[in-house]
Length: 262
Ligand SMILES: Cc1cc2nc3c(=O)[nH]c(=O)nc-3n(C[C@H](O)[C@H](O)[C@H](O)COP(=O)(O)OP(=O)(O)OC[C@H]3O[C@@H](n4cnc5c(N)ncnc54)[C@H](O)[C@@H]3O)c2cc1C
Ligand code: FES
Image (tube, rainbow, N blue to C red):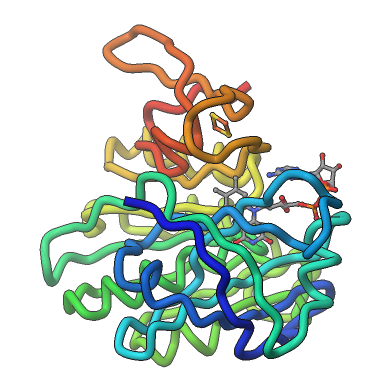
């Protein structure tokens, strides 16, 4: 059951180029949220922009009733959101969507994040760490300054492997190439992926080749966020039949082998 509520901004600050962390007091959403779900955010107090913007739930503290967002400024909505100050109210609808499928406790899992795709994966790794899973996070970014959440993943005892396009930190190259060359798929029960579409498509292909399960979190343009407008349609193949699914309500998380990449 999702809620619509005004959440008080507790903190907001820049963590990387064009990237902001925001903490909000939203106990009703924090209590219900599971990793992979998102909130639909009214970014300003005016009608501009008219539509809400979907942002993943980055972290929650249920005892404190707090949820956090991590977002990249790419247009009007995220720019206005980044200007909100502690004490301001931000209207949220959520939690929305279908989250990640959790593995059996103690499983060995891989998590692949490209750029801002790290946002929903911190909440996921929080939950996996509570389940005593053995976690390796493959973290891809443009350069050293743009690497996100590596410290948070390490604090949760995940092994972190970094790949940057320019080689300024970690392995030089993209994270998909690294995973293709170095991962031992036989030892991985489940792989979770979020990032730019080509990266998710690349990792999904590796998973299909190795015949191991995985889930991807798709970031489609959204309107209503609740399954009514069909503006977020994605093609999903199930038992050989391709159908349109709504990323907001049927996803945003889908099995990697079911997504039909255009
Ligand atoms: C389920 C879900 C979870 C998301 N979680 C996060 C998150 O945690 N952090 C984060 O930074 N972003 C996230 N996004 C993406 C975020 O919703 C968009 O960046 C945001 O809506 C842009 O709004 P804007 O008004 O700033 O930009 P706009 O003015 O709407 O757009 C600026 C430019 O970006 C393009 N654009 C906008 N949205 C998208 C999109 N979804 N995919 C590709 N291109 C787009 C537009 O076509 C336009 O060219 C998520 C998206 C979805 C669907
Ligand atoms: S955004 Fe309206 S149906 Fe998904």
